[in-house]
Length: 114
Length: 224
Image 1 (cartoon, rainbow over the protein chains, first blue to last red):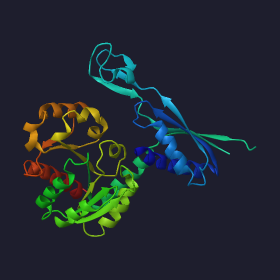
Image 2 (tube, helix red, strand yellow):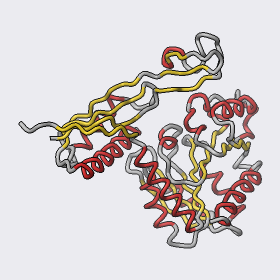
Image 3 (cartoon, each protein chain N blue to C red):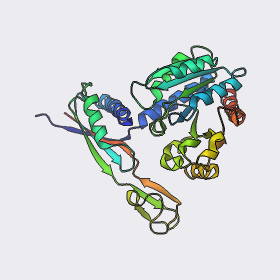
Image 4 (cartoon, rainbow over the protein chains, first blue to last red):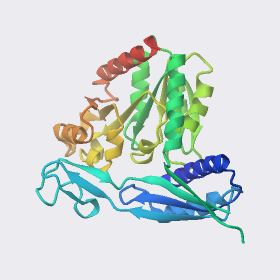
């Protein structure tokens, strides 16, 4: 259940941004979540509802999740391919010398405040 | 209706924890304290391995152990019985420790005189790997009954580790576990990881592991 721990870290980051920008009430937090980040969006939003309700700054606010596609680069043939469909083996040349370009992000894109 | 302000943040959720962990590491360097983060799945032998390790090192290095669990203090009792200072950290249902929770435990632990602090993280191959605890080195235990394919299934755990202990090698004949294949899978994810086969129960290989740890602690403490 790492989603709960992640939610606590989001709230702490939002508190910092709010303090830096003089914000008193947050209406929404937009999160960018990579397809292979290992974080389950439904669990995350459930944890958010529970944890955010306990903090005045974010209570009642919405956690919006934008999914970022996972893309893997192949060192064998130099091409990129979608990670979720093909995993670690390149579908073009069958090389295993591949690495993830994008898709493991868990980042706060922006927050909306009244 | 008030106007809504949009603040662009563009920051990793882990960035805040990473900063706190780096700060904790700097403070440990100043104080000459080495923190080891020991991770593994439940039942792979963290506590038995630690007991063996402590037996070999406790006369030359002052050791303190932090046992992180969702509940119960059986591990802390086992370490206390082995003769080292130990405290129990409850995560309150959370599956991992972060830098702040580690700091709170350390504050209590190093109240005594500790050169080597060992954090026995929550038994879990997923979440603890995502949160930097502030440890100087990360170690993982993978035991033979778990299977040699675990480095492929839980790649992040093996990417963040400096050393991997392959435990329970005495039972290898009874399982489809290929040590060479496992080492190759670990190297695919982390070419720099040191792999040490051990059997915590019989003590096989534990000298080599204790030697590695002793060397790491000396380097960290001497040059602090």
